Structure formats: structure tokens, C-alpha cells
Amino acid sequence: MNRQLQRLTIIGGTAITLAACGGAANTPAATTAALAATSAPAATSAPTTVAAPTAAPTAASAVQAELPEGWQRFEQTADGFAISLPPEWENINLTEGQIEEAIAEVVEQNPDLGAGFPGQIEQLAAAGIKFYGFDLSEGGMSDGLTTNINIIKQDVGMEVPLDAIEQANIEQIKTSMNVTEVDSERVTLPAGEAIVLRYQPEMQVAGGGDMTQLSLTQYILGVGQDLYVLTLTSAPGSQDSYTETFDQIAQSFEVLE
Image (cartoon, rainbow, N blue to C red; front, side, top):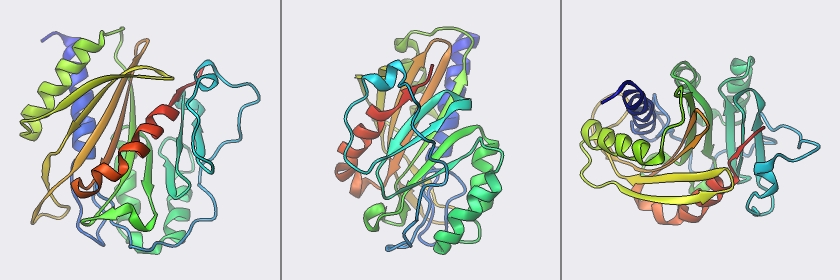
């Protein structure tokens, strides 16, 4: 495998690892997949990092799919992308300078997230995750897992065909996660053509103990030399109820000019 494909599998593996470790109810996971939340979390007054709409939409946003009323648009100019989430979802910008204040605000508004939440989010930032969002609605938690999204962006140094990206990541998933079935398809998003991978790894919950199964949906886009990986995680029992929402979130993804 050449050096560029090795890099692709490393990126994919990072997304897999950070998206696939479970967490027990009332104990947020040390990774992105399984934040525990209460069944009826406190309502938040406003997302922590919403940016004002730009005066002139980018080419991507000009063709963006129409979203349901009330969705929040989060723009991360430094990372060159924007994404929208349902009104019940919360977001933490993992690249902003005031990350500690952002985490403290979320914890203050949602104290049941637990004392370990700040350290776990800081681990995500240290691992290169650019964006993290999670569903705080009453239905957001199922089987002890809170539905969430994380986004990785990586400069791979060259433009790589989607076929190569797809093959490298499927092989990595099957090898590192001991998964036998990975569903793959191609979709056209406003931001460009994307690979969609769906699979259900079984992982040990945070702190050891029982294994738990997760349902992962990953959208992988190559834009120039940049690779974007959007990983959406839910409990298998709630996968079908999130299909439309996950698609709408992916459709909202914008690469900023």
C-alpha cells in the first residue's frame, strides 16, 4: 500500500476509533460515540458556537438542500466548513480558542452529562476532531448511547479518487473493528460526491465491562487535497428513526470558499 493510501486508512481508523467506543448510561464515553445524557435533559438557550449567516452565500450553500425550520447552522471558518443540526442538538467547536468556556457552558446547561465530560471532550480535540455535536432531545439517548456527530478534516497531500478512499476505509473497518458487513454507496451532496459507509461494530463500554453495539454512518468527501469524514453514531435500535435526519445533516454540509 502506498504512503497516500496508508494515510487514508490512518484517517479512517481515527474516525472509527473515536466514533466506536461505547459508554454506559450516566457515564459519558471517552470517545465520540456514546455520550450518556439524561432522558429529559435541560433545554439549552442557544448553541455555543453559532455564527451569523454570511452576507453572501458560498457556492456550496447556494445549492444546499432545504432544511426543516429551526435548524441551527454552525460555521467553522478556520476549518473551511459549515454544517446544520436540528434545534435539539448541541455543538462544541473543538478548534476554537475558548474551548474550556464552551465546555463549561454546555455542562452548566446540562449538568447530568457528568463530571468526566470536559476531559473527554478535550481528548477529542487533542485527537484532531474538528466538530462535535450531540442530540439532547428526549429521544436522543437509546440503550445508554447518545446520538452524535463528529467531523474530521485532513489534508492528504493530493487529490485521491473516491474508489481508493472507499477501498482503503472498508478494509480498515473490517480489519480493525472485526466487522464483516460494511454497506457502501455513493451519494451526491451539495458539497460534492461522497462515500457513505454503514456498519455496526461491537465495542467495550467506557471504563471496561460489557460490550455494546453501535450503528455508524460515515460520509467521506474528498475536496481537492482535503478529506472530510462525517461520522454519525446511534444505537442500533434507533438507527431507522435517524436515517432521514442523518441524511439531512449530511446534505447541509458546506465547504466554504
